[in-house]
Image: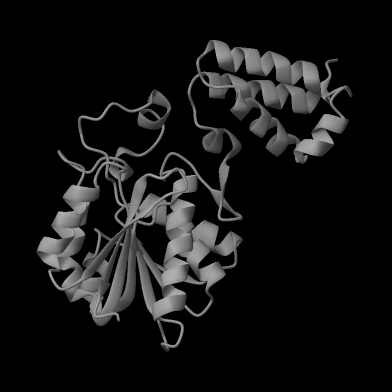
Length: 285
C-alpha cells in the first residue's frame, strides 16, 4: 500500500520525464478522489485505496502518452459548469471563458432592455459557450450550430446535464439559420483559427478534432464564411463576438472592416494581455 503523497510523487516524476508537466498529475488526483486540494494535503500520508490507486495509475499512463486530461477524466470544467468531452469535440479552454464573460457584459450594455434576444453560437462543439451563456443569462433564446452530428450529440448531453435550454442545429456554419430564415441579435463563434502550417503540441493534434482546430492557409477561412453570410442572419441592431489567435488582430480587424465598414470594431485582450477577442457592433449606440 502506498500513501497519496507517494503515489502523486511517482506520477509527477513520470509526467516530468515525459515532458508533460507535473501539474496535471495533481489535478487528476483531485478530480479522481473528489477532494479539494486542502483536504488532500491533510490526508497526504494516508494510504490510497488500491482500486483508486490502480485507476489513477492507468490514467497517468494515458497522460504520459499525451492524451489530454479532459479525455482521461471524460469531462472538463468551464465557467463553473461541468462538460462531457471526448474525441468528437474540442476541449473548452480557460481563455474562452473570457469570451463568455465579455458577451454577457455586452448583453447587459446593449440588450438588457430588449425582448426576445436571440443568440447563436456557431461551431458549438461541446456546447460550452452556448450552455454557459444560457445558464448565466436565462433571458437569452440560445441556439447553437455544428457541422458534426457527433459533436451536437455531446452538446445536447451537456445541455441536459446542466439543465440548459438550447436549440441545437446540425449544419455548416450559418447555413442552418439561413435555411430556416432565423434572425439573431447576437452571434458568437470560436471558430477554427489555427493556420494550416502551424506546429501544434501532439496532445492537441493527435487527440482533438482537426475540423475544430484548423482555419485554412491563414487561419481566417471561417471568419470569412461568417462575415460573408452574417447579413442574412443578423437583425438590424446586432453584435458579433469571436475568439481569435493572439497574432490575428490586424488581419482580422481589417477583414471585419472590409465586410462591415460602418460597424464599430473592438479587439479585447485576455487576462494574459494577448489580443484574443474581436467584437463587431452593428447599429448599436
